[in-house]
Every structure is written in C-alpha cells, then in structure tokens.
Length: 163
Ligand SMILES: Cc1cc2nc3c(=O)[nH]c(=O)nc-3n(C[C@H](O)[C@H](O)[C@H](O)COP(=O)(O)O)c2cc1C
Image 1 (spheres, rainbow, N blue to C red):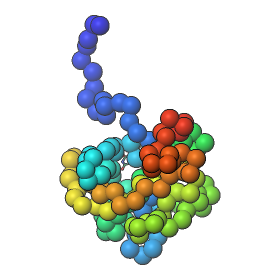
Image 2: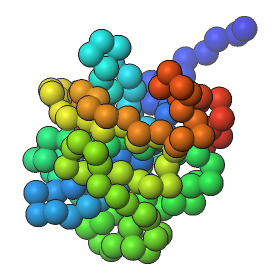
Image 3: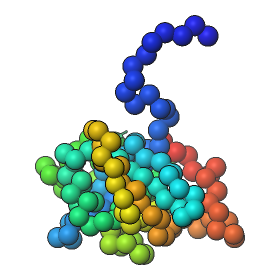
Image 4: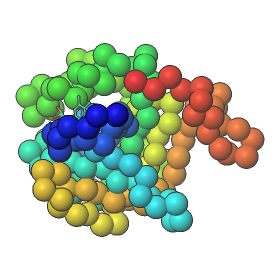
C-alpha cells in the first residue's frame, strides 16, 4: 500500500449508529442519533456516548443522569436519519416520525419500542474531550427482542441488519 497523509477528524471507522433516548427533568422525552459511542468497560458493564453541548438532548442527559442506547436496524433508517438531522428544539420530531416509546425498566428515560436492543444506563462520570462530552454509563438493564435473546441471555447480534 502507498500511504499519503489523510484528515484526522472522525478517522476511526466504521462507527456504531445508535439512537440515544433521554428524558428531561420536566418529563420531556427526546431522541438523537449518536455515532461517538462505544463499550468502555466489561466488568462492570459500561458504555459511553459523546454528546455535543449544543444538542437539545445535552442538558436532558446531563441533568437526569441517565440515558438509553437503542441499537438500530435497517428498517429504522429513515427515522434514524430524521432524528439525527432535526432538533426537538425546533419541532416535535418524535411525533412527526411516529416514534413509539415506552418507559425503561430501571432508569427514568424512554426506550424505543421498535429498536431490537435497548441499553439502560446511569451516568457515573463524564469527560469533556473537546467537541463532545463523553458520558460514561453504567449499564443497569438490557432489553432484547425475544427472537434475538438466547436461553443464556446472550444476544444474537448476527440476526440484526445494522445500518
Ligand atoms: C450518523 C450521525 C451521527 C451523529 N453522531 C452524533 C454524536 O455522536 N453526538 C452528537 O451530539 N450528535 C450526533 N449527531 C447529530 C445529532 O443526532 C443531531 O444534531 C440531532 O438533531 C440532535 O437532536 P436534538 O437537538 O433534538 O438533541 C449525529 C447525527 C448523525 C446523522
């Protein structure tokens, strides 16, 4: 391979494409698309999500101290793109896209009914890295579509057609 210098921004690829759902202290629900995220501890189980402070969701997540990471499959592509390009500050994007929500099992936030896996997290720390604040979430509960969860609780990710 012949190598030349390339741009440094967002050069770790592919990135996960998830929807993060949250609830403000006033009870308002919101969802945004997130690509800056990943597993960050196996024991205890933890994930992190990076949120830009200008997002409408940012204060909801920071003040409530929790969020849900929803894995997205290709059936939800249009909704993912819409939620990732429109702000709840300007319009009720959840209503417009007919996003189905239900209460999470443990944390005070909604989960997305039509996403196959919902990872409920409590924030245990955060780091302002630059453009993003990385919220470290201790996983409190994971719900998976019954067709995907094996008898031992493991999730068969191979059945999910990710975006
Ligand atoms: C593929 C994709 C990845 C994104 N990743 C992030 C991210 O990691 N962090 C973030 O704050 N915004 C990210 N966004 C942008 C937000 O989803 C977008 O600004 C959204 O409209 C914010 O909604 P809100 O203002 O209602 O919170 C991403 C958008 C797309 C389409």
